[in-house]
Length: 164
Image 1 (cartoon, rainbow, N blue to C red):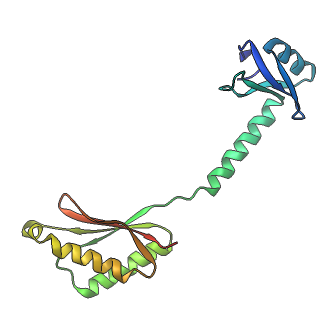
Image 2 (image 1 turned 120 degrees about the vertical axis):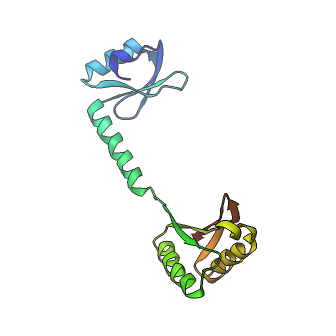
Image 3 (image 1 turned 60 degrees about the horizontal axis):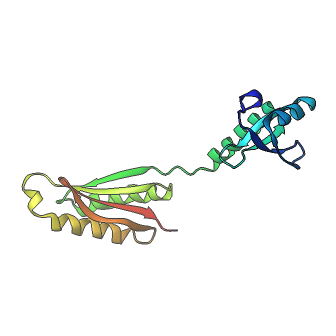
């Protein structure tokens, strides 16, 4: 909120140099801001009384957008990549899938390793658990298990992340 939009009876006022001018009525604060050819901006509306500052509103918005942009740059986005296996998979295929998982982990992604059971394979979930644990054991040098193998419908799922 700026200038006439501020309807509070009393506000704590800070001038353009950052000095506290104390608690005063909103009208007096607006008068001071107008004398300095600046805007009265409500900085902290939830405080008792609300904190207002005398600043150039355009400059304030520019700096705020700049801060948000910097925060967005520093944000780290982690995506989840999936590697699918089956209960009757051969060792060479496991090695190939392991290379893919290793590449994903090196890129900083999480890896979801899943074993899909079809038909009668659902009766032998222990085989799938063994495959997942062996897969995790062979990637133990660079990855940790974030979530242990767990059944989700017709597939068993395990999540892995890169070691810190």
